[in-house]
Image 1 (cartoon, rainbow, N blue to C red):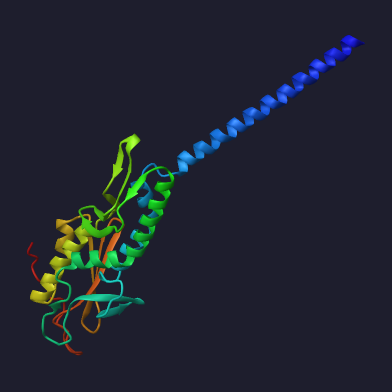
Image 2: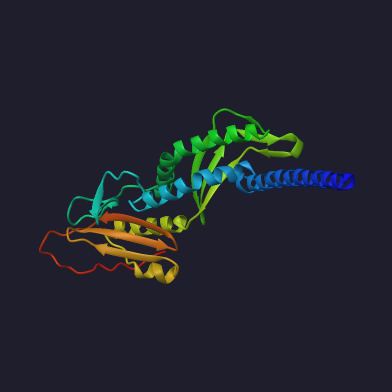
Length: 263
């Protein structure tokens, strides 16, 4: 009888030890899972953190501005399919060629994008500073400097004026660049060429552009009162703008003015 009790006692001890061991394993396993999730979800460095925070707003800003002729709020515009399309070359007179409205189109668009995303970038920078300070990084510099640059195949948001470092890891970040893949640079170049023809000759022949640049689609939509809407497309990017040059009064029908393309 005594031996049976001892065996029962031993079984009970083993059961308790088994439960304790299982509990320990569950705790360790749960911690490992959380650490793994943290590693997956946490940005690997400040640049990744900023890219993730800014890129959605940057994409939206570029799409909206480029669909309105390069301005977020067009002032001198043609109403087309419910959208206000900025005149980039314009005259309100008949028989006369237009005057360029944005001779520095690329610079103008860079400023417009900056004005739209500035507050968002500043908010992302403040969040980044707090996040990486909590993670043991040293953050210095008070006021960030932001500029937007349309470059070949990319639109960059350059952020400077502060740095993030962690000496024991040898990690230091003092320049941050948020990028978006874009063909807007090419579209702006084509737009400038078209605008120069509009300002000099009153019209631009569009087919030649697509022969020289097969990846770019150029549409010219003539409107009844003399305006034209140009739609330039390459891959996922689109630039839409309006012109009004050498317009004729109602009753004239001179057909298409064809001007040889000079590149």
